[in-house]
Image: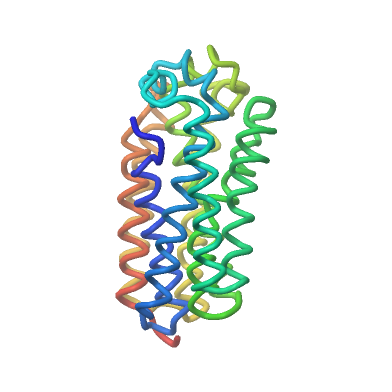
Amino acid sequence: MILPKPGIVALVIVSGITGLYLGGHGVLQTKIAFWTLLGLALSTAGSAALNNFIDRDIDSVMDRTKGRSLPSGAVSASAAYMIGTGLVLASLIIMKIAVGAQATLLAGMAVFIYVVLYSLLLKRHTPFATHIGGIAGAMPPLIGYAAAHGNIDLHGLVLFLIIVIWQQPHFWSLALKYREDYARAGVPNHAVAMGVQPTKRRIMAYVAMHLPIMWLPYQVGMAGKMYLTIAMVMTFAYIALTARFFFSGKDKEMAIFHFSNIYLVVVFGSMIADAVNL
């Protein structure tokens, strides 16, 4: 597994494009979009590399992560640190020069929250670390929106809120699958610290919260009825899939994790396609 975690970078790009489009009043400004997305990709890849550097000891004892670049010996710790730091610095310089101070500040905050607060200080000490980490993960659409719009308003905050809520069941479903791995590594996420049933209840609660949250873009005039229809159909499907898991005797269900990825792409895609009143 390579350092930058390309799957995460891809999801960041999707959410960043959504923010750029909506912040640009329905127009994707080519120059701003290019530099913003490049900055987002670099900062995300750099943060992932630094996360791998920080977690190299626990990654080596987890079956899911022991094949990563550092535990496998493919990349040295010092190289990972330098690569991560270099990518982050490059992203912030590019964004400051080509995008603007506000987007750069938000990108810097996202890196600090994910790398320092989440990875370095909280991940190994509290199950609520994912809530802090989720703030960093919700920054990309806000960064895109600020880059295109020039400031942050209600529409930008709605995009931010969507990702804040979306991330938790997305991660917890993965945590349930690798609960023994996390326990062996001493990472007290919800699945380890609170057990399977409480984590399943949290997943169910957060997925149910998607229903009012996904209604907000239509309510505040960001998107029209086509978006609302698609978003509601996808959300009910997400709730049904999660409810089936919740009422089952299973301890894990990766279908929720995989569906959450599809869900985000489809919902944001429909929001872009049906943006109104921008």
